[in-house]
Length: 550
Ligand code: PEP
Ligand code: MG
Image (cartoon, rainbow, N blue to C red; front, side, top):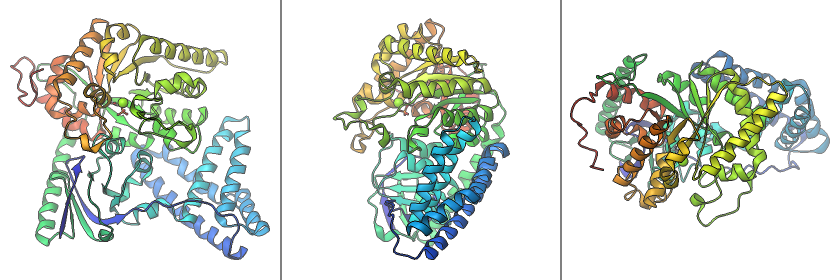
């Protein structure tokens, strides 16, 4: 047995085979060394594999987000067999001596361009689907498919590093946990793992020799065991079963109110990164979505997502939430969240650089496309918009002006829209200092404590060497939060927390005593927090000894 230590980002245990992930280069070669008949056969095999993957995705979506939303994967299955599409691919292989992947990629691009040029909104939307199935087929043909990423059976993934988009795209039913050499506990990849309730260990000296061997991630003790002894495996399995039992007990809190013993209510909302997380939100009985990190739509896309593509996603989330509030944060790209097609310059200090609202107010067409999509989705449920990385009143007014411009454009065309609550994220010290003025511009504040901690303590949240110094309980951070709540309430502005600190059980009482109105946390933290809230009595002396004086 070998033991390697790292930093755990979730208290939990994962047991299963270790599987190495090597990033695959998906360069597409045009000229084939095989005969056309052989390429046709490769294509046919890829079609079969794509059908299998789509069937599995349908089943998963059916369970997590319901029949209507799962139907898209049935449509994709039909498209993979569509006569026109298949004939165009076969013709390129036969007449140009091309590889199957080249033929699929070229046909996908051609069909997508044709669909995109159509007037009918339904047909336009098919452009996204044809791109999607083509990418799936190309990935299968070049060996870069998700099946390869995770193996056929559930595994503990071991990788040098994982980007947020790779993490989002993974088939969660095959992912027991992951172990990476790089990464920091406050990175977006770590946040995603928490959202998905996946035990993960980062900063581990990994060894290629582990590939295929049995492993256990022990999130409680920050280590991974490779080829564990029989005794250890038995005791870890016991602990894992206890965890599952504890989770089952929490299920009894579903449907119960988030209210303290002395009658104080607090909203417990969930953070999500994509549509697939909505199933978890409902399973964990969150009263709404307090942070939809919309930038993951951009990170999952090869090009700027169109208004229709975004509208379809927001509408699906809003409809699935069935009248519960959905707070969509506008694009927060930049820093550790990069999409190539934005062509952002390399920066000396990306966290202090061209990101989030700064990009949106500079490249207004990108911003307007997103805002129109959100406004259109607001006709289908309860939508709020919040702007990230705000430092001044001027930015909020500019953003609201752009929003008003979009609303007018849509209204002139007779497009249906609902009321939309407007808020901002408080994640810079400047915003805290300006909170009284900012509160008069918006209806709510949401404290982004991940960045607020980074900027208050001058500690790069991406740098694993600084994890020991990154103290989210630092009195300076807690005072920032208290000050924001007080300023918000002075101006009738409700105040929530959507950074990771919101889920910290040691601070729940402190936050409630401060008057925080909402905590937005990973779906898996909703029921544990409900349990804490329901056990508190705020008329009694403060009991949280863990929280330092501030
Ligand atoms: C935050 O900064 O706390 C936050 C919620 O935003 P993100 O983690 O996406 O930067
Ligand atoms: Mg942030």
